[in-house]
Length: 254
Ligand code: BTN
Image (cartoon, rainbow, N blue to C red):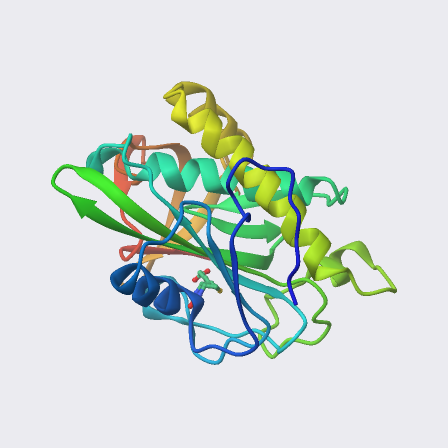
């Protein structure tokens, strides 16, 4: 299973397939601790039983329907304080991959949720390990809802629902295309042309430059997203002042 042949230099060339697994991020982390893992290795499962999301949330995914994988990268060219550049490159790679399906209003919700309209199609959990002031390796956990057609969470969607496809998508083919797309943006990141990727990220950012309500400490406020800082903080214009927020501080009202 998962015999994929992506047209890449290294991403997806080595696949660790697990029919079932608690969390591919955790499995990848254990693998790295116990053996030499090639850059570009993908740990992938058909049935993730204890998937983890951002902010300590869980990630639910019906068995055999979706993509749940972790990609191991070694971005030692990135200084620790530039970690968010990797989030940007990965977001661009996933967005480019999904864009091929002609989805309307496909956006990245800061920092790296995949949204179609007001519904979430996927999420990314990046866990970096540092060696001194550099990133030694990074585990990029990606959950993309593909063929699942029923969700307990009304704000979730899948590629099948959003494209109104009657047939199921072939997950192996999709993982090939996804690997190619991520590698393309990762190689671009390696050229250290951060400005280009930063601008491209803002271009596809959910609710960029629009006034919307957000919540902080149970209080609603009106804010306009105007940028994302070097450290990955969300920069908003609130009452004509610029304010920076981290992920734990605020939530979107959707
Ligand atoms: C989020 O939106 O909160 C991030 C979700 C990330 C889920 C993926 S599924 C594969 C990988 N393994 C995990 O345990 N989590 C990530």
